[in-house]
Length: 86
Image (cartoon, rainbow, N blue to C red; front, side, top):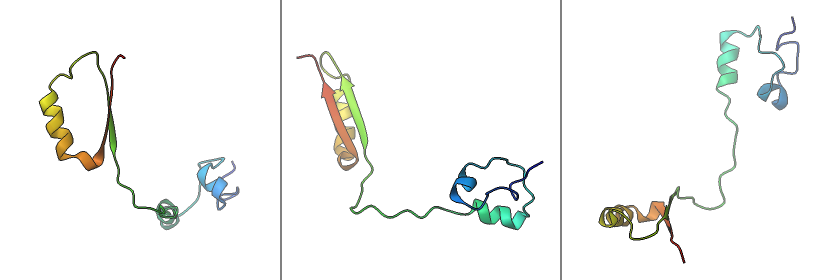
């Protein structure tokens, strides 16, 4: 039986998509391999995660005062879209 040790397990492609999951690695090697975190470059600008809300409505929005209070308190984290018939 072919093991990971016999294949290309140290290249990125072999690491991400191994041909065979059977291996003879020690626990120490397994922990080292599992702890590898890809290095990503930071974004060139500061990001603020946001959640988008989209309302499809034919009339007044139900519980409008509740939604207005919620959106006012969290405005910097939200995008709100309201679509209604023309």
